Length: 380
Ligand code: SF4
Ligand code: SF4
Image (cartoon, rainbow, N blue to C red; front, side):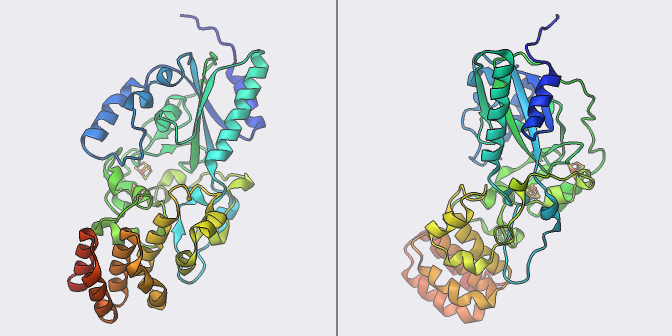
């Protein structure tokens, strides 16, 4: 069948580059039927985190999102800048934040770029176009879209890997009613070969098999989840306040990746390696003032406070004991429980009495268990 296109790939590529996007691809709006069995398994085996879009139909069927859909434009935008590479963790009680959250919130940056591409396309064809933009929060499975649009291939760590920038890219998509010519490139879809570095390096064993992620064990999810983090993962989380980069750091496909020149993603040292005691002292409002423009703020302040307490425990930060102790009576149960755990990691003999006293007045059963464990057995 001869397909006629309203927009050539060359025109799209030019439009994308005028808004700073050099990795762009196109695929049809056909259903992602090959993803359905993988998603079914993901949900059936209980590996879903709850952060995924609840409507699985929308995750694989572009027409369920935009009934007039003909094409999907996929973009990948690199986020490691020269300044990111040069940044080193300052001395002291510092947490760490995943590299993707170093700069300005990518949702806003990519959404603006995709809107500009849509505007440019409408001008080019001389009519209004129907479109739907997705950056992370979209229902469609973004990595599958990017792979079918020939932007890259999915590695055993589940990340979309591009030839130019490795896996250090943000993904965005634009479903449109325009028929756009796809690009014609050859991609090696099995470039992992015999490598399994990401699987063996994962601190929590979340990569249970090649290409199979147990989302609930992934630190990226755990650091964003609310509630009490299960004990089995606490030590593996280390000083991480937000996200985890291990399976990307070890990936040889990232060794030669080119860098982003977009100042929007340049890091701020204080936000990339936040001072942990400072996080404890922040009010909710002050947190939003400092971190609200980054991609690490969307779960709110309390996960950060909990994660900072956990990190101080892992760092055995004795100097932070005075700041930690008041959180034993915090209104939030995950804060009280994590504080009991952290205190007993830091100075078990010194805090045993104070944790036992808190245990005596604790009404929540899940926190009581944590406090009891922390006092009696949790010290290693
Ligand atoms: Fe494992 Fe970290 Fe990768 Fe999650 S982000 S799969 S915890 S290495
Ligand atoms: Fe593939 Fe190795 Fe990279 Fe994992 S670390 S994604 S196995 S190349």
